[in-house]
Image (cartoon, rainbow, N blue to C red):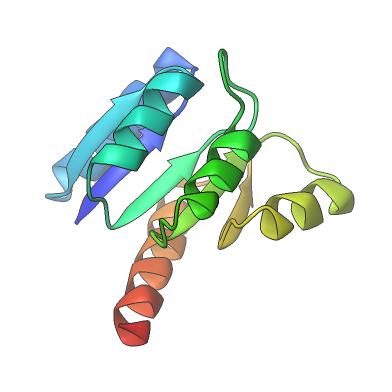
Length: 123
């Protein structure tokens, strides 16, 4: 599975890379929003995991722009923003799932696998 993580926290990015790489996934990382949008809009991924609060372009904007250009890749928002309204806003922007930090890697992995499985069924 090919996963794009757009996360500005370098320690978390390293942990995400190490965890998912050890499970045999192909991982790309972007540490700021504009680079994440460029990768997401020009490369093919099975799933995109976006932080909301990013430098240069926030994850919500990335999500909306990807949907506006016709990208149907599953998107999971991974963020510290934890209000009910934040969740609604993220899902209305086009995210397929929403996970709040802090989180367990195992739970995140299961949510990602569910998204990818659901996307495969829709094809």
